[in-house]
Image (cartoon, rainbow, N blue to C red; front, top):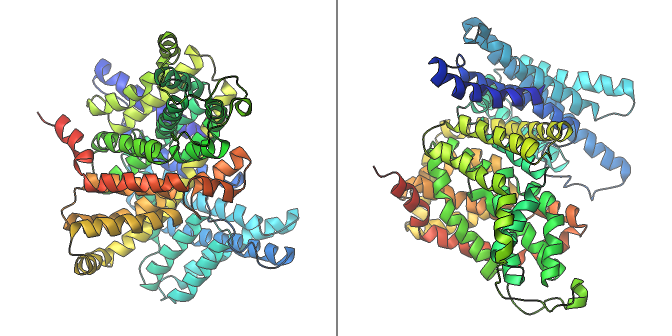
Length: 601
């Protein structure tokens, strides 16, 4: 059902584009219809993500405590706590739906809005049931826990709603649940509920925040661009693009390193996740880097770190999300990220030690008879055939960015065009996308977006509470008193965001921190576009820093190496990226020049 909603999100904007010039009108209320399909995708995709164990968590930080019985108790506590929170979220969502039923707004073609909104209490109830069932062994006991735990949360919320709940015991309980392996959304949602509850405010405020962000006008671009990237990742697009970059840049150490860095960055921009890039390209690029003479640890470091750099390139999902939260035009952020992304890639390649001649593998270790070459020697005879073979993939960014920047399509329509283009070219031009692979891509996209949207909705509820409490104004006064100089603030901001990126999931960090930090940055005269690039560049480093550095975990699994081995390998890359980020912070023109130049009449 989530996959069907995603398919309709692709088809309705395409019908709208086709019908407008032909009939003077398109699908009734098409944008709002697609936005509410996003709500369907978010809730049902989250249930699917829980089923397959893909809901984001901080991991079991208490894994070293006690024996098997204690570990089982910790797991029951964490999952049971999440089930209780889901029960309260189901109640909060039901309160919102009941209000909408009284007003009875229409969505399109006579469909009441509350029919779609009902998926919120139903979805949270299903999530609570599935999480509760994980607390027991045996069919009947699982069923009892599946009903009892979320039901207890629903009952407690209905009985004590309006009462002042003690805050710190709840915070300690949620923190313990997170350390025990509870999903991140449960921790954020539970904290948001506790804060509203403590102030005696309606619990429906949290459900309203989740609803608002899932039906945001620009949010459908996230799953649609993600679908396009997953389709490319499941076919031979990566190999074709790799052949192009190697042909253009040469096959020696220099050419292979630069080609790998550019390809990883480009691919991450489209897939929406650096982890997907590592899984899709790791097996392809590591042998190429090894054959060029790079030691294995240096090759793993390059693939792991370069996969984080696509966040600044269009149509990156975090780039779109920042534009939505900061209320900056998406096409402006697309243009703003181009030059900083090139700077970051250049710093990684030049300062990360990947081009140094020392330590290169001898020919026998590379499985070749030639000495490693550090020269740049493009293969001219291969360039045109490689370009022709990869022509459909090379045109994809033009479809995505060109349709949006030109004004011919809205962000939602541009994303739908890109997703349809990816499916069409890979299915018919290359004949590599079967129905089975398309179904897997749709399912994976639904699970990724479902898990992400849960985190975004809960984080927005928490942020709305903090904004309403006046915290941003207090933060502005405090920071300005402590750091009177703009450049001292930028340095402190970079250090803080680096720490935040290593502790928080990127989407939660954008929704939670941007509304708090952006007013502070504006008070120093920092352009919101420039601030966004600084913010996202720091989040790139967070992919490489434990405990939330997901690239380390993906690389460890992909290459079969211990986590410590991978973490040690990326240390030079982290320093290189940090220096690149300081350059971006110091030179705002890198972020603002291109959008300002192209926006001139």
